[in-house]
Length: 317
Image (cartoon, rainbow, N blue to C red; front, side, top):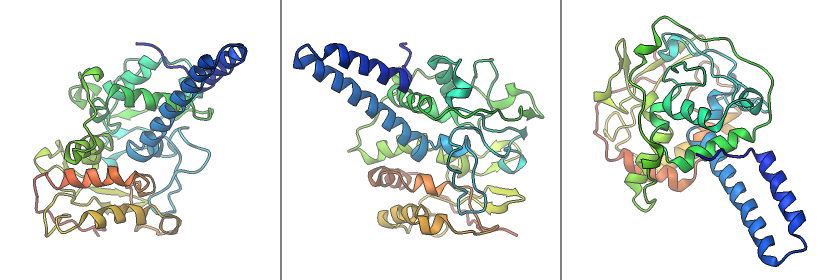
């Protein structure tokens, strides 16, 4: 697997090629332009995935907990989370999302980053707790995973580390690790909205939060039925039922209602509100900036899942 070049190295190479090709024919100039455009498109795809769909930057950055949906504090993108995930997030211990900027990853190969993202094993051989949704990322296309790597390579380096993780159980209990070959993963045709929506909802790892979690872990017989309660000093909020159940889920929602919910909750007016304990762990400010066609595809897929009656009180006492 060819190692992806960092953005700085890549553009340096492009500039050099352009300089020495200036006296040559227009075909060389055209190739340089094509390389530049290709690099830019890869980075842009990676940024879209990391900040709008897979929302890597949401977990791996400091967030303003006083504002609605706790948006990322500008300048901290990828530098590591400001608080630990623990009991409130069903973690058997404490784990803080690490620094993923080039400062922290400067000695990592692309293969090591990819294995961490999709296989759940870091360069030290440690198994990650699946609050990092590598089981989902293992189903992404090779091109999308490489794009994410290219994007995080382009982030501003931020110095700093996070506290080491602490678990109350052996890492071997985190479940079987993904074994999928990225080369086998194919991007569905966007014209097939259901299949394409299934791909996008997997990248967004929606099922991880929207599936009930008990003492033995997620209840996969009730996928997307919601009900898990985030309970910590910041707030106590339950995750919504997003199955097509008419009474307790989103069965009565139209496609327009679904998309507008995301768009309105990502607006500056809503995100900049100080809402106190009536807040949300859902990163609306990121998901709500997904492309309309991607949100519509996710809606189309959710219409096909099993309707489950599960009334959820958003802010339980």
